[in-house]
Length: 254
Length: 275
Image (cartoon, rainbow over all chains, first blue to last red; front, side):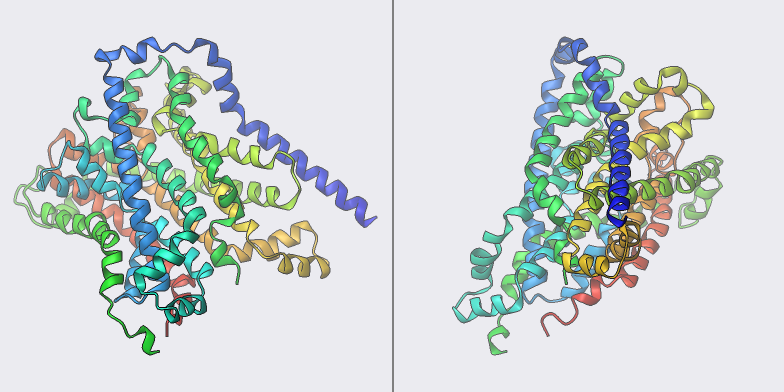
């Protein structure tokens, strides 16, 4: 009896999931339906190929900001979890606090500051404003807290490793899955960012894709949707296994 | 113990870039913001901190807050329930299409908002978009469809990392699937749920992209407080007013963040580690 009920429940859950999956796939099916109507011409020839300028600007912006944020976050997480740094708890407190305040909430004050230091309408200003990624630092902190127990670090010290040595020989070799997860979340956030570039890059020639594509309203939507979503999907597939294993696993497993 | 009595210079240098960005993006802008608010502006010709009060007299602020409350009352709870339901369901059975399902939910969230707005306008039809009474529902629906995917991925991940022994103990004690989810899994991922809830609430309060991209309908020009701040600064060249409104909107955000930090054990855990 018990087993029969279990099986029935399991079928019910799968049915519910099946319906949810179908519902979630509507946008995807919509994309497929329109695939025959995709025309590159209006996008490529728009305004003497300004599209390629946006593509270039987006690449510079996304990859610089991602590189900076991933390296600085992972190092910061490692330092907060493993090494002895002044004001460690204060740093952790501010990381947690700012993790809950989206950068968009700061868009207006940030604009004023960046304008005063003369980086308005400049990709560098946008890169600097987008490179703070407390969520990544916190994930790295949780991760290193769980994979690098104090005993292991102590053994490294006995072997004569300094702070940098511990990072090089223990921290970096262990960081592969961490890098993939932090990069994924950082990339998606930057690639899709709208409000901050909207405020900081007013000139069309300095613009990036996520803003520029507004001009194609009504034409070539499907094509742009497809183009914009492919990099994120690829990156997701690459980091999927780590994410599914539990990005917070360090914290939940006691 | 002697081993650790080393110079703290190297760790400080290692964390310096992160610290720089923390100050650059988190602390200096607020300082500059307060300096800016003192300047004379259209709403407060004499300048000074009264701008904070005068900005709230703007006739657009009230309706914008009502819009936010609408999202908070209907769409935020709906998102929380959907995310938890789907991730718990995915976690509870051996579903063959598990990975694919998560990707499908994530897909709309991977689209830039500009594309998502276009897309949903096309899906629901432009006559629906142009109908005044629908605009709140449309904005809510877009943020719902683009917002739940990444949370499903994250919460599913945190469910997967609950240790098997705990769940087996639950099964031995006679829990069925529902009890297992409600009594064991949910409490164990409680703080990640709390984290998600706060970010969803904050996201709704700061909403900008969706209404700003629907502006071509002429119905959402000053739909949200963030948009009003934006139009102060860039349409009226009144930065003091825009910054004042942004800083006011930051207050509930900071309060929620502080509540979270104080009431979860994220900080406590770190206490004894290097003592």
